[in-house]
Every structure is written in structure tokens, then in C-alpha cells.
Length: 252
Image (cartoon, rainbow, N blue to C red):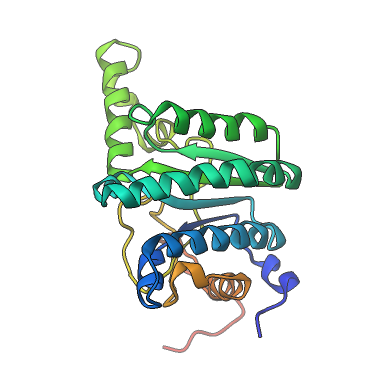
């Protein structure tokens, strides 16, 4: 039985990142075309957004399409773009009514005009919503994000706007796609793989990780609740130590 929502929200993370992995393997294990796995993955995303609101999250970041995904077969990339268009066209109005703000991170300079227009439409329509921010990492790669931030800062140093001594962690963070968004407290990855795959590498410095053995199309409220319950049981020290109360004798 999944933990109750009121129990989870007592120690719920503010920001959860999700690597939605395993759509293709889910389909192949059932003798279905890979596109069917991606379709079911969209349904899982809908469930995740609603669960995130139920559990009181402020931010949910989903890894929807990486820069490396362009190397997949042309037909699969085309199918994925079609699903993105359908998701925005079919779900955007409901997301707006639910109070969800959509923010897209990732490179935009190489996107086709129709895709770019849909992403901008989603951001513009929902920009005033405050119930949940759904951050969609699309055409995204963390290494490239950091390199872009470094180039922007270097240009400012070269122009005399800032000095090299002004550059610190806070400044670099301000030049990332996620500027203004708190770092993820928890990152969930489905399908049993245990790696970041170029996702929020800077931002995940002190994130907790939960790796689930299920493929993304099977991700539901119960799986989300289990991941949050595991997060709630963690002792987050951020590089420090948890000291015992002063009145408790420590065994040596």
C-alpha cells in the first residue's frame, strides 16, 4: 500500500527531477513498436504531473528529449516530435486550468519553427501560474548547458563587464538554463539504469537519487509515492554531519 499523501507532504521535496527511461524497452518486451512505448510514456507523464501536485511539489523537471536523442533513427525522432506536438495541443489547456506553469530548458537555436512556436506558446500561456512549475528539458544536455554558461561569462569578462575574480558558483548558476529554479532535491530514474545521462549535472550536486526497476510507462502514483517515501527517510547532510542532541551520550 502506498503511503498517504499527508504523510509524504510532511517531508516532501520541493523539486523533483525525473529521467523518464525505458519507453522503448517496455514496448519491445511486449512485442509492440517503440512508438507505442512513447505513447504510453506520455500517459505516465500526465499521471506524474497530477501526482506532483497532489504531493505538494513546487517543481517537477522531466527529461523529455536530450541533445543525444537526435542520433536515434529518423522515424523515431519524427514520432517523438509528433507526440510532443500532440501533448502540447491536447494537454496545454488543462495544464493551464490546473495552475501549472510550463518552462522549457535546452537549446532552441536548432529547433524547427513549428516546434519552437509550440514551446513558446506553452510558456507564454502558463507564465502566471503558480501551483506547480513543470520544467521540460527538451533538446537539453547538461554539459552543453554548462559550456554555454561559461562562454557567456567569458564574453562578459572580455568585454570588461565583470572581472575574472567576480566569477563564482552563484554567477555560473545564474547563467544556466535553470537560473531562478532551486536545485532538485530528488532525482528519479526509471528502467533500472543508474546514471545521470547528461541531466542536470551541476544542479544535482547534492540531490538524492532513487533508481526504480520499472520502465517509465509503468510509472504511476504508487511508484512516485514510494520514491518520495525513500527520500523522506534519507538523512541529507549536504557535506556536513548530523550531530546527536547534546543530552544524548554517544557510545565510543
